[in-house]
Image (cartoon, rainbow over all chains, first blue to last red):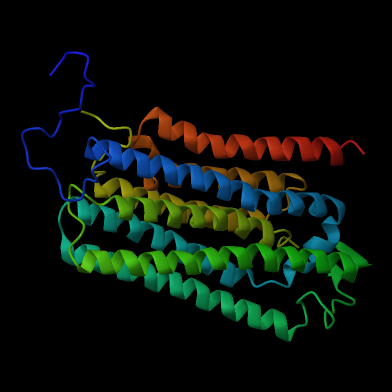
Length: 238
Length: 95
């Protein structure tokens, strides 16, 4: 063999190659880094996906602040706050699941994955209650939409323009709806992670799917961190 | 050899402290919303949301324990978002 031959990384030359290490990666670190960086690029596209909606929200909120404040007071901030707490708990159980995999605690890993899914379902259940209320109050944009004679907070005698309030509700349903869709996708990912964990596929040396699935879950949590004050708490001080 | 995304095992204490901080900041968001600060209500709400985001990104998403390249990728998302907002608002705020 000549000296000009490509040097093959030999970090795993004298130990048994991990069955989880795919043949086109030199080391487990390289494989893990490729997955993580790929996920971060995907999350960058997701930031822009939601970013366009946040940008639209900001422009219309600037234009129709009073109408947005009036519309916001009709949304149940208590349910929104509970949902924020539910998501914080779910993000905690995700990192505890990764910790359990790193320290080879199978029972804790499975429990944390189940708890994450329960918190995710609780979030969607509370969300469904909110949507049901909005349908009953005719606050869903469309033919039956009605927002007549609603006071603008802190401006006695002034009423919100229903057309402008309808823009708020359109943004509310699109943004929380897209977020809820991400939650459903996240639940699908966690069902798959649970199945993999059940089969014993995750070890202290290999748990990249947990890490990457966790990145997605935390990202969806961060979107909610911004949605909650922007949609639910515009004008509660009166 | 140290990889880009370190497989550092974070002490459980850190995770619980971050979760408690997130709950405190949630309570703070709600408390601040009940006080009339005029235009600073939105500024305070967004500032708290950004702090919560940074906590989640650094500790739960392990960026603090990863390489600078991962941090760069994470910051990239915020950077492109800033471009979107800057150019859009430079139009709408100057009409």
